[in-house]
Image (cartoon, rainbow, N blue to C red; front, side):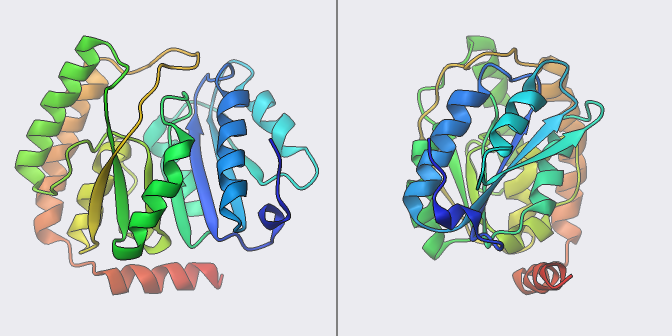
Length: 255
């Protein structure tokens, strides 16, 4: 694992955003893979690691990598657990790069797929991964299929796996998002409501690299269902355009 000189520029071209909650076992290998892939792209970058109030050594592991000379790792800490949606939104809003990359902190997304998704960003605004050959329990796969079917039918965003955390987007897409607890499931719907171009591509999916999933039936079905109803209304009432989001991104960058 190395950090190229490009990674230490003051204004990054790429921002990688990763929420973590009690994932100390996955951090060394996952961040090693992420930094190796990003170094290989030859552009400046930052890696924002959001510790969502972990009770294990997650923050300590992140901080040890951030303390290395020239490290692109930026820790963000919540003093208490606020949920993945809150952690993801915080990281997205603090991202300074022109292109923003998101993935899960449990190691199930393969960072080696990032360059493939970035290539598709040349003709789109948001590229979403589709988890191929999912390494999850049958119950989790079943709940995900149900959730994606209902969401797709109601929101008509054309996305088959909204829950896949591996996504790349232009920075202005961040300004089409609203802070929901279930943000991870509705990024495509919010982006579509603002008129952004969305494409999908199958990506690899791996076994968890430690930690324990905190998603049960309530998180997978009932909570998203409540937000789904609100998002269906929002999509029909949203007046945002890509130009509105671009202006907001530029103003925020200017301070």
